[in-house]
Image (tube, rainbow, N blue to C red; front, side, top):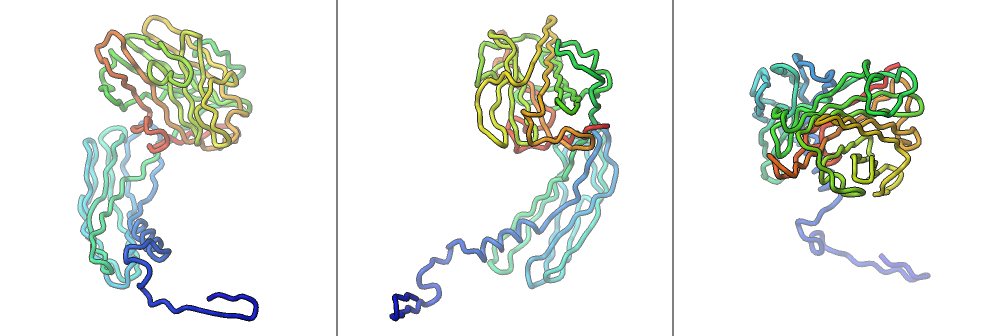
Length: 332
């Protein structure tokens, strides 16, 4: 319809005469959202490095106006058991069914986790819909308040109350081959700082770079609440590099985060104090929950592994924020 002053004109368009059948419409977008939300699971918060043995609820929602049947099965990585391993869901039109499964890990629960998978048919289009639901596992850890003034010197005597988190996952390396690379990290806090310590045993320390490419050799990368940092001992001394923060994209070396690095033979200790002002998205008070992951890069000029490799707190940390995270709770 077109209106100009007192003149009104209109046109009639036959439905389907203008837009092709595969045009993305709001109705199709909403339909896709309903399909993606068909299969959901209960989130499981589990203390770091402990076994899992509990029931977990799984929900299948039928977005269609016809009955839905889905035969789904769990894909089980080594070290996991799920009972039952297969399940048939019968769901009424526009209905929901909740089932439970028993999850048991052999030893501490580790990634990769079991994945529930199967296929159903979209009755509106006749196309198959692949359903996939990984166990929603969230490792958790309580981190202590710093006992007092923390001296950044690579001596972790003030860190006795902070539990270490060993890095069990490796990329381009076997994390069990500790003669090449072994690492762990710890956290503490107070109202003014978040403290991070990383201990590394490395057969060869090699860091020829500085600035935005320190991640290409021996270094630490940290992702914490939508901020991304790197730090290392370079030829110019200890350096902290800020890649991203929710309030700014810096991509520059920063002096705002104090860092000490101490080397003793093959043992390297990184000790950093992140001021509250550098983590404006985090409320440094007791009870706050912080999500993070971290990795340690290793590049050996003399081998035995010639390619850069790394160990991670959670798998996929090298993909930045597209990885499982650990939830840290600030203890009183």
